[in-house]
Length: 195
Image (tube, rainbow, N blue to C red; front, side, top):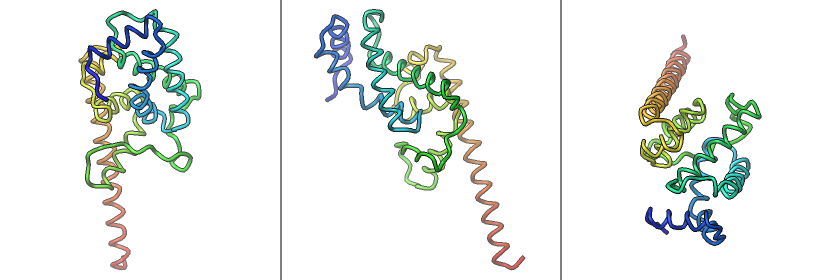
């Protein structure tokens, strides 16, 4: 069910006034997108569920402190990212998760080449957290740079810079992987020729 921005704002205002049904509607509207965002950032579906639950608990406790003009999606994504950052920092989990420990969540990209899609998803999961967040918000959640800058509470130019840096990181990672694959292929050719 697609709601207009005015309708979402109205539901948000009702929730701020204490309407439980309106708050339940907010949860229903944003639980899937919040889970997608957190799952992509944390690489762990169980942890993502816990963080999404904490996000909505935090939202409920902070409803009266939020500005009247706040967009519900912006606030929810801010809380999601904040809780992810806290979890990552508290666990000292800034290094990559081992591949054999947890499967990487599938990133929904519109690419037909499975090998490239897999390499791209793997590269995204290895990115620094701020760049990973911006890339996921832009290309997975399909948000505009203005929305991303609101969520991250930075100006649009900084959001553009993070996005550019993220794309450069991905470009370097993919070119490195392609070079490595080319070297392996050359090595295999040499072995087959008896060198």
